[in-house]
Image (cartoon, rainbow, N blue to C red; front, side):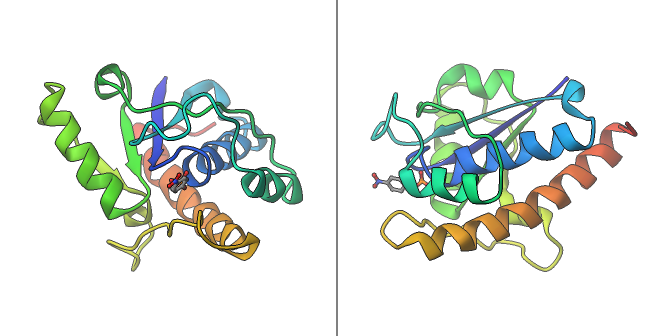
Length: 161
Ligand code: 4NP
């Protein structure tokens, strides 16, 4: 079982949507038995909360089940997840500091769009202070990036069904 954790700041917009898109793709391609996913935030701003209403609207539009409660990244995440994927540089920096503090200095943290050829270093932009169109944008970015991530991981772990 390959364990994947998507991480953003608040864990109510980008990372729960990433998790939902990922799970949906796994399900429709019959791969759900090979992966376990979750999402978390670097902040404690929205612990226990449902995803943002705009995230939910976006998921409904694309018919993707979404069911998550906000939580903050913790020490055991660095032990338990094979892939920890940050949405932007700020999340990446925070995770790289946390991993040292939590005793996992060698843990590799990935940036979501680094899986997309030609998009190295680019963020999944924070949509929180914008409108619904920002959620449309992150949906498209995540949909593409997760396809590339899945292809990459399936090749690396030799997962064919
Ligand atoms: P997320 O978006 O990191 O994609 O969940 C945000 C959610 C909440 C806040 C910022 C970004 N906030 O400042 O509360």
